[in-house]
Length: 68
View 1 (cartoon, rainbow, N blue to C red):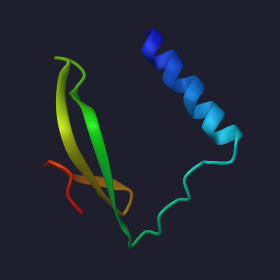
View 2: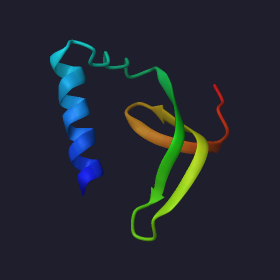
View 3: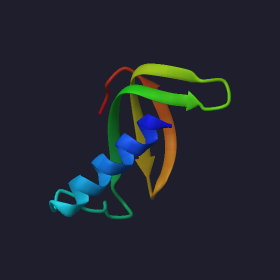
View 4: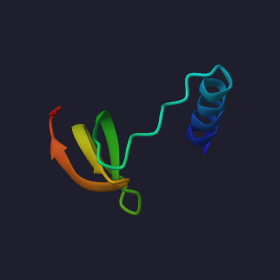
């Protein structure tokens, strides 16, 4: 619960300072490199060093390692 509060405050601080990310265009593929990724909140399964691939605003896949 404390982690969620810290992340929410961090997100608010980043947005307030003008560092919010610019939305990607619909035809652009975005790669997010995650050091730790909560893959299954129900079981608490966490993946390490993963890449989340997003296209047209939807998660297409999660890849092992940092790819592009």
